[in-house]
Image (cartoon, rainbow, N blue to C red; front, side):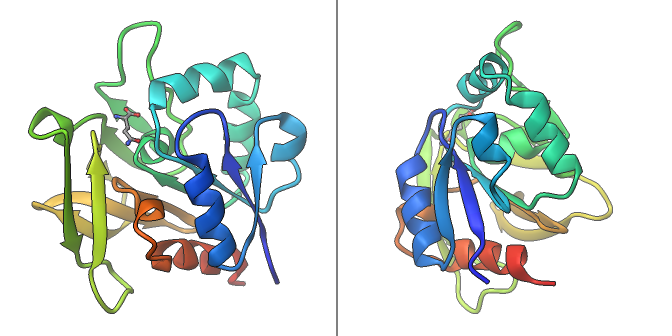
Length: 196
Ligand code: GLN
């Protein structure tokens, strides 16, 4: 089965995820409207700016429908800003009135711009649970995970901080595999979508 995987296309690095998903074997489509959200089997929330994406989700009346689909079990993968949005709780969510809004896909607390306070961007090779060699990880004003629930599995760490997690059919990374040409993380997600 070739799943139809949407990329939330409000803001951020949408094009890179569309390409990565196609190469990983999915039919990749942009999602900007409710009608598009209703047609997909799974969703990727890209990197970008989580506060801006939250604002647009509210403006376009997609916030509650998206929360409902996630609560209903639609598989999702969030990278960087997408990880922030998939959280149950966001630490340092942004200026009052312009905060990033959690979608409650994964039982975790995520700190926004966590690495950004130390160094804005960096790269490194990190071991990734289930992959046979490290992933080259690009971090850009990246979040980290501060708390996980019992059902959440840690897939990767950088400097002891949790930067990749999975809960059921939900996946999140602090970094951007879509920019490296290595499709293993997207392949893992597409396999999660199709596994029975
Ligand atoms: N700092 C951004 C945010 O808060 C995330 C950065 C990224 O996605 N590269 O949403």
